[in-house]
Length: 274
Image (tube, rainbow, N blue to C red):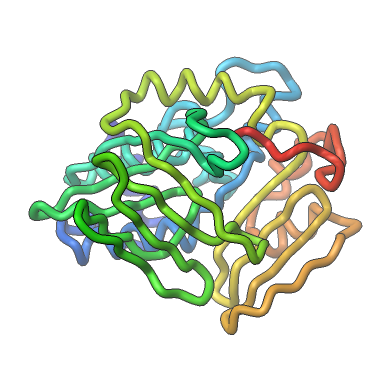
């Protein structure tokens, strides 16, 4: 359990004066604030991969949030889902962890993604810390549901008692599936799967996704993409990734200065297995 003083500091950093009520409006407010202010990135992970530290950075929710408060970093799916789950529970929500397969056309039935579902008054709602949809995606077991949004379109399709989430990959004009496979996963398993991703999942070059008031920013190595509020996607290669990470994404100069050079050029690397 997160301690109340830490919860208060995190909520304040998210722009919330106090813990939101455990209601649909409260969940929407909390997840919107998370999506707007907590990036999806591998900065803490990348540093600890290179230094050889175990466990990987941000594996525990407390460490994740201290790094967020100090440096503005988030995490990849395992630590960020674990931290979001811990915050939701601390605020009184009935939340549970799930895992599944992101992009099953590449890795069928491989467990490589973490997500969170909240139950409110019998309704189930997805709040995914990687997709950063900005609003909870309602889930039904008898019919598809969707979010129609310029930046974050997503659709939930019932499947084998859970769901397939079809969403647009950030920084691209391509939709992929996320197949949710297992419900009510333990915190220990999240930590174990995060550690198993040390070599295969977003470990060899910097990657970041950040929602901004003006649109959606992504950085993969030196490739910067930006989707504006009209939906237009632009891309370029940058000479100074530190400028993007600090001036645009809002990370601290101290943590960015600790990042090592990329091991590989993402343009030539196989897609990470998460």
